[in-house]
Amino acid sequence: MRTLRHFLTLLLFGLSTLNIQAQTQWTYNDTTPVLAMDTTYMWEAMGQPSVIFHNDTLKMWYAVASGTSPVDTVLRGRIRYAWSLDGVNWTNYPGNPVLNIGTTGEWDDEWLDTPEILWDGTQFFLYYYGDSTYFQGQSNTNLGVATSPDGIHWTKHGVVLSKGALGDWDGKYIESPAVLFDQQSGTYTMWYQGQDTSGWINIGVAFSEDGFSWTKYAGNPVLTTGTWLSSWDDMFAAVPSVIAHDGYYEMFYSGVSFYGQWDSVRIGYAISTDGINWIKYPGNPVLSTIPGDSAGFWAVDVAFDDQNNEYLMYYEGLYIADAQAIYRAVSPQSLLLSANCNSSVSPGVGVVAGDSAQISASGGTSYLWYPAAGLSNPEIANPMASPDVTTTYKVMIISDSCLTIDSVEVVVFPTSDNASNNLLESVQIFPNPFSEKISINNPSEVSQKISLSLYSSDGKLVYQTETGLNNIEISTSELSSGIYLLLFKSPNGNTFTRRLTKN
Image 1 (spheres, one colour):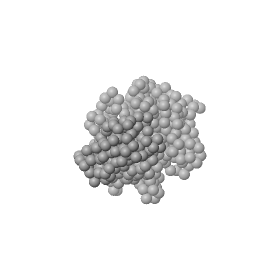
Image 2 (tube, helix red, strand yellow; image 1 turned 90 degrees about the horizontal axis):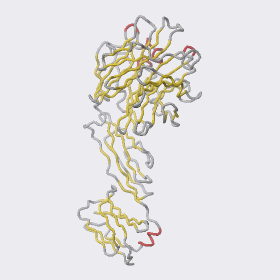
Image 3 (spheres, one colour; image 1 turned 135 degrees about the horizontal axis):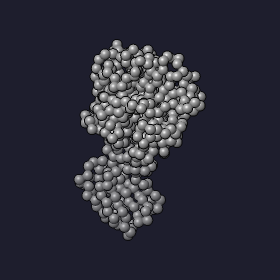
């Protein structure tokens, strides 16, 4: 609401229900908002919805400002609450607003905006933009938090995150937080937009152990604008909305291009396995206006309906006579992990510690491997892997028609050590390459028992025994062609390895 409000006259909405075929099949109606401002207050503005499912009810917190003229010093931004059973028909809480500006002299005594709601299983958290100098240039902008047992009665806890220093990527202001809580790890993650003094907006991330004390990620920003003068989001990558699924995060965000300015606001989509490293969907933007329509999509918030397997998007736009309203878009989950994905990954591989092997994926136009440690390049289809320990690498495979996640295991075997080499240096292994069998003999007639294991190239154990090393034969007729690793281990833990090839 705060940013879009400055440019109300530049956005116009058309008069039709549109079906957009992109990342998913979005359907929206730009003539009938789900919530609209009171048009008797010509300078009222509303927007920045934040929506969650809670106790079988869809609940929304949003920002509203009202006054009698654009220079009215009484104009203030506050947070309201509404609820719905079907996502279309909404009831405003009669005691609105539920969160008011601070008293004179407090950090948020002029403006509240960009609410973000979070339920952590115990209480509600409401993160929001606050300002004490809104009419003097927004020089004192911060993000604060309030908590509530019911989402209506709130206790403020003050500032939790501030803008950066002059010259930083977020040195002008920060707003529009998107916050998730991981119940398994007990950690909180916040994505937020920051603007530098040149006017560019990017998205950064911060972390917290309690939801109150936050630390910005040193590598911010994590989602940045596109290529200058040639991308749809080359000026703003802003207002993040993040959803967490098992093993990955989805982000929807508003993009603005320099050439189109405010009538070019569109929605982009990105995905990540860790919330830090993001890949923008190559088919972006996923939600755009039709040719000739100057409507835009700003301040989206997306909730996922598990029962119907669909996304519910709420966003702010214009209504009658430049009045602002909140609209709704719906889409099935048609791209992510689709059954139509034509993608694949290479088999697992085994390597001796210190060596490397190539792993690969196919079927995409973009790739992101995680963790990045031990990989030559985590953003290509076929990186070289040389991990220190056995590692399962996940890979996101993204194309215009599909997005999926797969994995490849790299098994790391110990290197031979000097003690083992002295003990087993005379061991004979033949033939190599082998076909029907492997013969092992030790002319020195070592009497102690040795653990012997044979692994395929993907790290799978295909044979194991504990025996002396005199005249051993291993039947290999049922093994497929390829590279194998023979691992010897003495009772004292020393190791010795040999590479073998089956024709």
